[in-house]
Image (cartoon, rainbow, N blue to C red; front, side, top):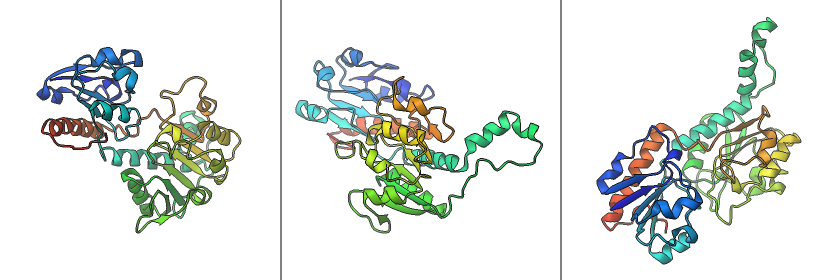
Amino acid sequence: MKIALLDTGTLGDDISTDLFSEFGDVTVYRNTSLQEVSAHIGDSEVVIINKVKLNSQNLAQASSLRLICLAATGFDNVDLDYCRARGIAVCNVVGYSTQCVAQVTVSMALSLITHLREYDEFVRSGEYTARGIANSLTPVYHEIYGKTWGIIGFGNIGKQVGTVARALGCRVIVHKRAPIANWDCVDLDTVCRESDILSIHTPLNESTRNLLDASHIAMLKKSAIVINVARGAVTDEAALAEAIREGRIGALGVDVYSTEPFPHDHPFQTIREYPNVCMTPHMAWGGYETRVRVMEEMAENIRSFLAGETRNRVD
């Protein structure tokens, strides 16, 4: 069996792909552009991807393809309708990044509410030494204890963030499609109006695209911290950037973008240097242990597929 890994550059150079050799001949590509997809798939029966987009155009020549394995939970980069029609199985990996994404989410919130970037720069610049005073308390920062942490999307990651937020002494409110026991579930307007910290963990689909739009951003508190570690397109990125520039929200933490990497004309280019903005390069999912786990899970998906099982199928 032939297996092609199309974008191992997104999985880190410290992660081995040797475990896939048990299934057959493995071809590894560090990156695959849209124009290279057909050629890189060739006559492979299994394709492993992370960020590469697969659709009817670039899969048309993949006559041998039987299985697509995603190194991710989200599968919005694969045309599932086309795969179903062609009998191509698609598997994702569920729950592998829960702890890691929750860790980065909470790290962003704590850094932004405590102004760690500014305090760190104060010391690094030499100003602390030159000032001659034992401490500095500017900018003013606040305790997270007692704050309201709103969560949009309450799957594995959202629940873990909620659990940590509760442990930190926050009141947690949740917006999700169906209410859940033991959590304070509210509508979207309420979670926007009442949250001191608002983190987003919902998948991208037609019902969540642009979910946090300009009208809901306008409902946020002037001091609110917004964190998006879900998908860029679930928010109105231009409206978020405008809210930061105009001082209508307190801070913004983002790890995901509607176009990745975001281009020179992206709205976030205008706020890159703001001290109340923390932007990371879609890394929240990618701790070392997390990436080892996702590789092992994909190998298990292939093993199960070959045994005629339907493990982690999303097609």
